[in-house]
Length: 373
Image 1 (cartoon, rainbow, N blue to C red):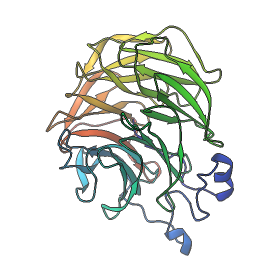
Image 2 (cartoon, rainbow, N blue to C red):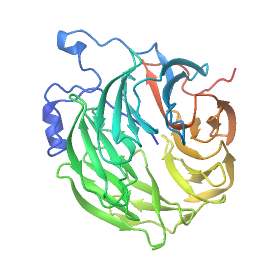
Image 3 (cartoon, rainbow, N blue to C red):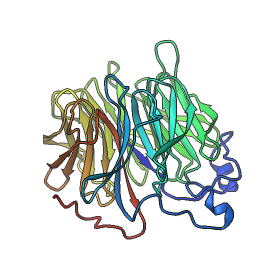
């Protein structure tokens, strides 16, 4: 799942309270850096509206990669970045204004920083081996990059100061971490690693709670957090099930949620209204749907493209965008969450792997509708 920052400004005082040595420089002001130094408001990077930022990995080759920005109301491409990205880009996080994107390059151990206004890569930040996810802090001042590592390296989480585009800290969270979610209060993070869900105190960088998968032969790969941060859902790919965890007590709540479909469950996302959990299943090319109120999976699945990889919900929870990295030329599926039907399949490029949804401007568009041409 991709992440959009929840607030545009950052003060040095607030930053020092949120994280230990990953403190941003005093010039950090989220995605308003630059023009605010002259007292001028930053111009919008795009016209007012709703946009989908799609990372095309060109999986498995990884050389013809790109970032494509779609106008969600018309499903048309408005900007493309095809130069300067690394090999096999597979994850994206976007500042709330849409001005800056952070893209993890899995095969290059780096993060590309992209300026939306110029549609150009402005910086490349070295991180750990095999970065697989990027999450932005709520103030936009830090980017947390999950490095899965390999058989010889444990991996970890690189913390990037977005004011300087430099790694200021690396968090140790276990062996070969795969996903991370930031709590709404900005003080904690949750990660899946070593078949375990861990809670990290971002003020100290220390692990302060763990929940071990009771399935000792399992493999936790996906993770999603409810909007209020009180519940985490960890996906056991090996068993095709989801574990629900009460984050206040760091204990399992209820039994495992068995998913329909053939298996190889992967990444997950919770809708903004908290009612639905979508889980990708790459072996059967579909998405499983869990009703969070009853903690049960619906009997059917939603067929999407080949090898579904990530999910992002619209702000009103009415639609979900699903990337499928082995399905060209229409690897982005738009799902109506009320009907569980795919309304459109869009061509964004070669091997779409991750997607982030951004609203530019206040009151833009109709958040309750996704009109089809």
